[in-house]
Length: 161
Image 1 (cartoon, one colour):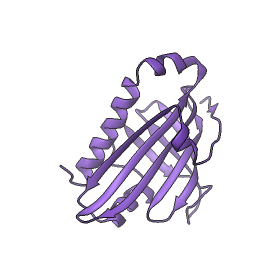
Image 2 (tube, rainbow, N blue to C red):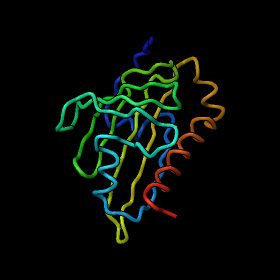
Image 3 (tube, rainbow, N blue to C red):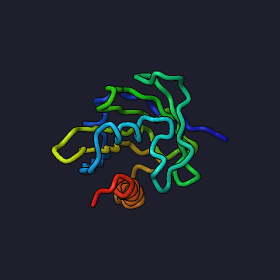
């Protein structure tokens, strides 16, 4: 498989990315259960469209941890965590992808306790590769639809309405 290398970034990219989509969701389960689903041995295993998620770094996990995951069976991603606040937040940047879609891409996961469970905010931040910059500026439809599918899978998994 040929790999495209993406540009690295720090956590400030989640505030400055040209494309940023944030999805807060209230889940009727304890924060520990949500964190385990995000950071455990089979990350995001409930999400339709994602598979083969696995850490490629040994435990304990933290900043610098690496992971691989496949989206829609055709986009393979290698990720490196740039933030890891055990039990509450972690963020990664994609270091390599099997398709040259992005110049930079990452996700931020924020887990916060609320009165009846957990508020989980899933943020996607990206800058398209030059080849896809104009189409991405015209419409976010394909990517945004996939992001919403991931959010809906998460709500179903954790029993949210």
